[in-house]
Image 1 (cartoon, helix red, strand yellow):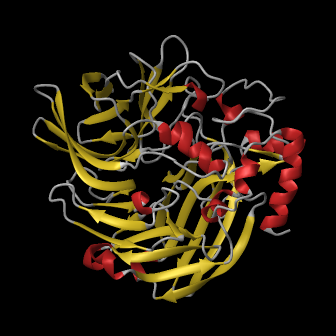
Image 2 (cartoon, rainbow, N blue to C red):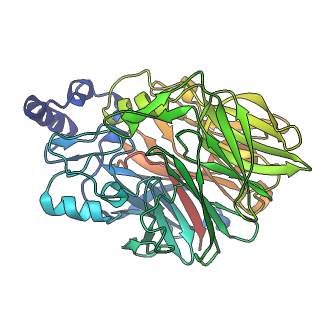
Image 3 (cartoon, rainbow, N blue to C red):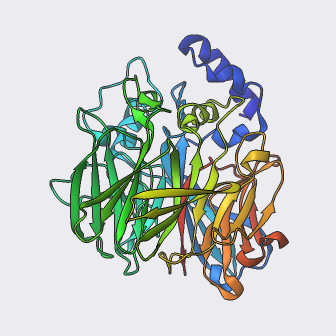
Length: 480
């Protein structure tokens, strides 16, 4: 069945189920194929290679993201909702290949058995949905995948991490750090320190007393410390910053209140100051709270210290419309507007005066990454840019920017290509930028390698396939 036949069939289903996305999808917005989704695991497929793979980039690129959008005539209506699929790209001098496998969560297993969606999503409700007994009933494990203790962990932001076999992509079960923390949110953006220890947060924004859980794990995955903190208000949290002495979380002005779904409960409070919560890494105690003007951030760059001054970068939005409106429009394959463009900013926080200063760097950018070998040094960032020029407000360019000097370099693929998160791969002459992409004009997915110090010259290698992968979020690269 081709795409047009599928949409015509879904239009008939809509008459029975009142699925509002169909009328817009029938317009065949060209970029919307990135949100069609897949329904089965994807077997190995050799990709067409152009150029030469640098020796340092031989290994495996893992990606994670929402993949199963529809089932039994129903469709999820928010980008956060579909079940997660791990994508693996094998890169070697002999060639490049791809395969994909769903994270076999308890939710997915139960819905596979019943043949329908059973539980509501973060932004979707169904008339006959079952009540969620705990976080795991809604865990779709669809945001990130990172290495830990010789395995991979597929991460969501409101439930447990899932253990993944790096070779087979088989799901090996839920990771439990202790009986007390079973099922407690372990967020999707852990950070590593100079020793390789992993730090993370878990937001629990519900109830009369919203809470934040802090985690410190050894490089072997052993829980070294954890601590629960009550918050002044239930601001949406997605990522955080790690510095040599502190963990900094943003309690944003997108506040959880009343609503019929998680996303429906997010309300932008333009008159409420956001909070930088600064925790001491030694004992996870709250060292300071610094108020900043209302802001919304999905992703931060790295953090560094200069005496009693903390520095970090963030991809900042003017409000939370990206999550409450834009990500819904994407999943429903509707025309925009989608969101305010994210702007790269640099924060400087004085621990003496407990005041923060923000410098706007004048660059629309998301998905920042950096050299993880030196996480606490001021350094250039890689990112996905060009949102402000794209018809879908999705990135079309790879950018490298130095937050200190403002120096930047970029390569723009132009309209028709959506760039996903670029990762820094150490190597000769400044290393490399490795990323996946969707060429929706040609209905192909691919990966590209560029010289990090010379992005403007374009890719030194690309690999493409006639397989359209759902647009995802985050991943990692493991060298052979």
